[in-house]
Image (cartoon, rainbow over all chains, first blue to last red; front, top):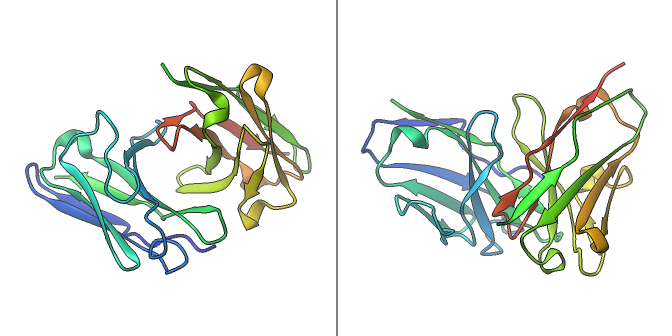
Length: 110
Length: 114
């Protein structure tokens, strides 16, 4: 199972909106509504930000949203804050009854 | 509150085996799959497999099949990851994850070095 494709890095200024893409195939992202997004700060365990494509767990800011079109899922942050800086990973359920992560995207708040 | 508490850091020689534990509390252990994820130094997340604590059923990423075994002991709400024939590139932080991805253990550093 190949890793999902994410941009290596994205950046934006405080208050700006950014998007992070996650591209897979019809055997993972495109075939199931089981895409999740995780945020990771240095030295910390990842934190779930979005599950099942577009659902936010309790406590996650509504600045974060998720969507999917075809084989590509997208995480949107609608108003960057300094504390949003970190690494972001997407994951998807696959046709092999396994899961796969993306390679990760480093978000820099300028 | 939900907690996943993992066993401590391990140092192993190449070819050895390691067993990492993950003790769950604050929720019904048999109600949610437990996943194992690893992260090599400076690298991304890698999904290893899952165990259904209720049935004991497992599913492993192809990369780890034959070298990884996931088990559980429901009497003490604990999941286990055992990896054999360790290599230097297995050096990583190993995480257990449950409650549909919402809860992660603190991570266990496994270092493989001669």
